[in-house]
Image 1 (cartoon, helix red, strand yellow):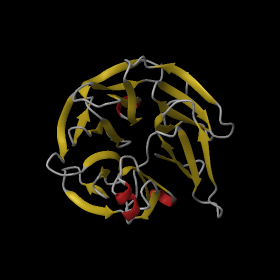
Image 2 (cartoon, one colour; image 1 turned 135 degrees about the vertical axis):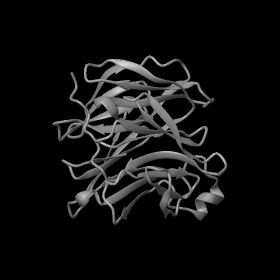
Image 3 (cartoon, helix red, strand yellow; image 1 turned 90 degrees about the vertical axis):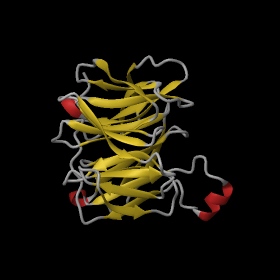
Image 4 (cartoon, one colour; image 1 turned 45 degrees about the horizontal axis):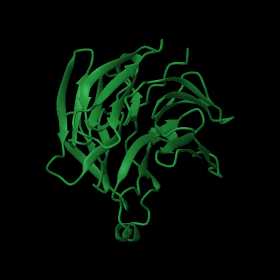
Length: 273
């Protein structure tokens, strides 16, 4: 899920249905659009210097997607083994794009974290992870938060200092960390799958606030709107029983919350070579 400043819109994907969505925010009509995709898309990023194109992380490789024409331009494949796909990703340290891989049926330590640079070079940054998520980096920081949702833990990685530490641990709770975003004070806002909430944590790991939601499975969030003062939140219906869906009919919806804090600008991704 991303905020596109130049377009004044929020964009997100439905992974299982292979669809991309855009909802305008500033115009009175708040026009909504959607596109069918060739492959499952798992993450998005804005392109530096372009109002119409976005980077799209798909299950097999990066795609340059034109929001005006709907053209999907594949930019090479990752060559992942059979039974694997990408998951979350985002701009991160060293001006590179960071993303993770996982098995379709996740197992501990079988996925990896990769990064790719402006010249198209891919490299493995972390050799073992279960379900990679979050990928929230401060635009002025050399660190990035990455969760292993299978282990229910979030880590802080500094790839310049070559350090990492466990930042949050939900392994004794019924929820797991999913997508996240950074605010202007450097706090992490993270969607808690099966936690019915998006929680905010200080750089020291202290819980500052929690936004309760009428949906059990929030999946990601991003800051957008005027002065980045709105938090947009996606949620899922996947795996919920009919009884739970009847109780929480807004599951699968996208929510927006006006906050008293502002988001940190997210870095745009390099232009394609």
